[in-house]
Length: 358
Image 1 (cartoon, rainbow, N blue to C red):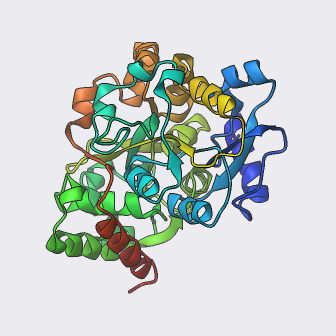
Image 2: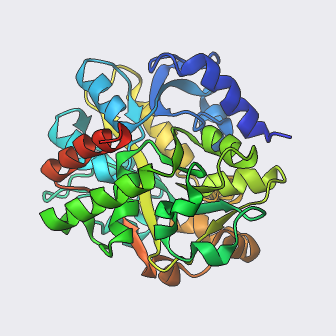
């Protein structure tokens, strides 16, 4: 049986995937949020609905490169939801405007470790461009009935010929190269050398030989894992959380030899935003409300960037989701921090070749 949120996501996927600018049916048209499908769930912004009478309008994108090109081509929205590795690119392209942090309740409650990531939230002049909201992982995820955990102690298992046609990784260049960087022993991908880039790309070519499908959203990989189409995946936290909630024997393995990848996503204010600027800040304050951490951690398996929100989640839930010891949690992780533009472009071009079998 599908959870309520999975049912909503499935329903939206069929009607919205065809157009990145498709808008939700029930909406406050004075604010448009450009987002990933699924994040329109009202449980993420109840304070906005309470104050304004309805959810904002939502437009959806499949990945950040698609969103970037759409915005550069003139698509108009007020807020958007990129992740850490693309914020600098969007800012330098001139499609963002600075945030007025005095209008964001709880700005000073954002986790210091996240806010200190180089080039993430603020620039060298102290201007804020990005409000971190959720953070989580891409990690090894597997069917515990079909795969012995001893066979997947290393991320290199994704390239083991024994798993041919049983593997899925995301159709997402950042997650792919985070995986490959970890597999070859690189923890700071911003310093990747040409030789390391070649090694990482060669690893992804070996993984490609085992890939049955490149998943594009959580619904797709949850269905593939729960339905037995694949047994081993490189997936986000919520894939195992949602699968387990529906009774499937899907687990996430956080203790591989090489570790996991951690990403941070959040909201930006778009340049020339056509909507109501006050409502834009209403929305930022609504998602940053500490109470929303209960939904992010409990239902999605993600962390909230608001430290007060994380402190309010009960200890048992934090332990279950792996957030009870943050220092241990980040000890063996690759943070998907902003990449040098030339390296990111190399990754994009090479990943397209890899998926095409070259």
